[in-house]
Image (cartoon, rainbow, N blue to C red):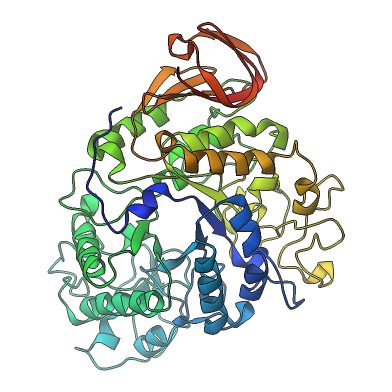
Amino acid sequence: MTAAGTGARPTDWLRDAVVYEIYPQSFADSDGDGIGDMPGVLAHLDHLAWLGVDTIWFNPCFDSPFHDAGYDVRDYLTVAPRYGTNDDLVAVVDAARERGIRVLLDLVAGHTSDEHAWFVESCAGVPEGGPAHDRYVWSDVPGEGFVASPGPRPGYYLKNFYDSQPALSFGYADPDPAAPWQQPADAPGPQANQAALREVMAFWLDRGVAGFRVDMAFSLVKGDPGYVRTMALWRGMRAWLDEAYPEAVLLPEGVVPYGTAGPAFHGDMALVIHAMHSSLFDNGGAGTKPWWEPAPCYFDAGARGSLDLFLREWQEHEDAHPGGAHPLLLASADHDFSRLVVGDRTVEQTPPAWVFLLTWGTVPSVYYGDEIGIAYRTRLPEVEGSICHPTYNRAGARTPMHWGPGPGAGFSTAPPEEHYLPVDPDPARPDLQTALQDPSAVLHLVRELVDLRRRTPALRVGPATRVLHRDYPLVYERGGSHVVVVNPSREPYRVEVPEVLGATALLSHGVRVEGTTVHVDGFGCAVLERA
């Protein structure tokens, strides 16, 4: 796994970033209505600055009927009233910038809410030939993924996920002449939608945000094998951004196809939602995932997992984008994915995962609350479309942040029954206030690792990663100067690693080096500087 130098670019800040994902409904409630909001975020920015993160990623905070937790946008240019006002979001952006923290927003590019004014107008049967008529994908005949029109307009519209999320039309890669509703990408509707995306991005970039994570980024052009036309669309967006907002970044949900001509995004989030993430962290404690079969993961205390899938796909990415030219994000969890503490995995077992997350060479993303060990919870009600598959409820990863002890865990003063989701009732649940007073809490390890990464360029994106031992424990070298030891297993190990001779421990939990022999306790981990 080799690294190559790259010239400095205005967006290179992303390579050194540490991201913190905030699900705004559950972060901090300032007005006692049981739902998190922007003033609540503003009140807790000092925690993020103390932790050392420098980039916030907000899940959608735009006006929405919340049939899919905000991923059904009713108005892209207005903050949802439950979160406050546009001025409240700008206040967060400005205050974050004062602390050296950038803000990324979630851009839902491929669909809107069925309550968006565009769809309401489209359903009304506006005359043919104009953008309003062709903003969405309409058919005269039913078909897979099509939903009957709810308005005067006859026919069926294509959904992107739930029925309440009609797909915006960006055209078809190869329109079928027998299906006249399959528009080419240069039709008025698709062109209007591209222009609208630029307008939305410009609106928020002008208010200080640093870029966007793009939801379902590869869902735009339909019938597009290999996403060739979709990538061409995003390359056009990227070229516009590079000219108009050169420091802004675009990050897609999903796996950027290898081999496409020219850059379209500044990185990708394949390790957040792809099977690679599952092969690392998903121990099955959250239920069966709808998009892959569960299998033992590497960070399983029983040492039953394998790194084969992760290392194979990581190598493919490195071969396509050497030296971190297209950085990957690796997340502790996210709003769709079970937390590190899930099933029978306890917070005491997570230090090896944190060492891996913050030293492998990806852009680390900390999901709110993971830094104190909040657990994924089962047997919760469906809230705002959280059950997207019969065996999996995303609400388990969306419960309130625990700022302190007490009935509302410092999240809200509202009665418990009015909380967006219930606070963990476990009397032993972790909370930030308690963790700050406990030097052994995982919170302090996360902060120490973030600081170590900041001070040690070899541990960031770019320097070469070389695996020295790939089973249990995982041992790898970064930049030729540092060795990382990670043992997710409860069992101790002893391995021979010539590269550790004379090495100095920068951080060590349950790891002892004797000559070239590394002794690792169960759940041990270390970062060593080579002699």
